[in-house]
Amino acid sequence: GAVDFLREEDESTQVPLAEVYNLTCKSIRFQAEEGQLQAAALVAPIQSDEKELGEGFFQAIRVHLEMHDYCRLIFQPYRIEPGVGGEKGKLVMGNMVATAAEHVVFGVDLRGSGDGRTIFSLT
Image 1 (cartoon, rainbow, N blue to C red):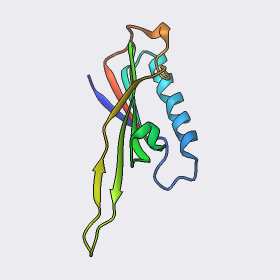
Image 2: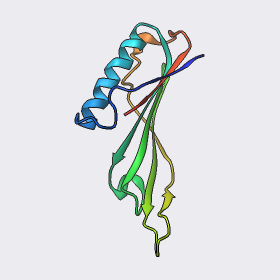
Image 3: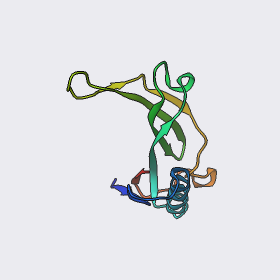
Image 4: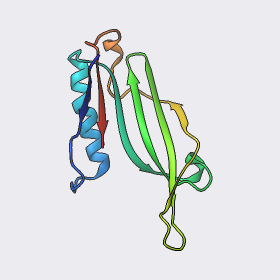
């Protein structure tokens, strides 16, 4: 099916990230309730602690991946180590972590519906 992208705000927004994320969830949920989607992925940067992301990692990209019968949160921890002696900094990736999650887009009553579109949301 088709893949669509949705963005509620741009980089210059003053709206708090949590609010942008919630607005995006509502927008995508409406499309799911109308039977227009088969899957959704909400992508957002997060900050957390080493207990959740791994030793030496405090930032990650979070992907909330959801279909009618599947829902996971996937975290890709990363850090940027500064360059030494004029060298560029280095991107260091941690171990990806996936956990089961609660549905925020697709309700139980929507199981089996959808027209084949997948939507990705970047917040």
